[in-house]
Image (cartoon, rainbow over all chains, first blue to last red; front, side, top):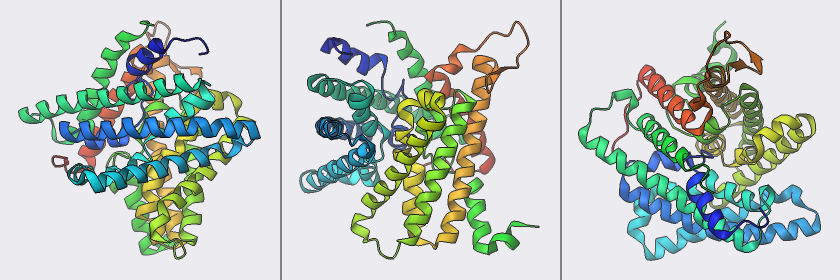
Length: 194
Length: 209
């Protein structure tokens, strides 16, 4: 992806190869938090922040690892950087936005095990070998894509919940999967745009 | 011979919980990312399950042996390092012995690190129980993960490509259901799968999140 323009990276990451709908990543928090629009909104925003922070840090670290020929420990290093960043965000939120923190509950520490975060770090380094500015643009747009998919599903789920005619076994994760499937189908229409 | 005689009362309960009652994918909705992403070919599903079981067992042994030493403040980091080391082993092994599958799975192999099943079991079970029980729990959860992944993968491969493990099995004139091979198909299949298992297991629908 050496000469790809930043705009096409943006559109690809946001719409065509959306992390949630194309790569099917980050589904645990996706399913758990898509039941309410406010929580989905907040979680999505936290993901955008963490992803941008971690993947730019990991990009720089990967250059060092590559230069010293120690890529073998890259997974361990990446995951530690991510865990540290999440810890940082948690502390900041606890101090300044306690209400938001209370509504995330257990899921903030779980950003650490959100596959999206690790995936984007891997994608900008080993998989695509992007330059620094491309890596930052890719991370931000992919994270926005995740946030977008999440609030779309949450909005539809809230409306469905008001009607309340979903079969019992399908309620919760089941119906969220079906809604996401329909949105993913719609997003397939974007392929070929770039 | 029943389970209680072999594994003792607690062991039998652990197995039952892991495989059916607290099934990681359908009841706790953990680890769905890989269940969705990797389940379009049976071959990939086998490699993925083997990887996850290996890492689960490794984590179970290490975490349960160290459970009295690990300070609770840094336990998450310890889980991560253990899991990441296990995944590095799996990744290198796949690259060496099974390069085609490694190629097909691409970045999904390192993503075993963030498979919430392993992390979730480490936090909920391995860190509080002796190695024997932890090992049984790891096997039960790994098995539950495997059969789910297999069920979805077999269904998707047959209907989307008309093949099973790469062998053509559908009659001539079969039209592939292309949508099942696409990401959207994965969501539909898993949605229906969750519907069936949750109805059968009688899982209560969640309250408003």
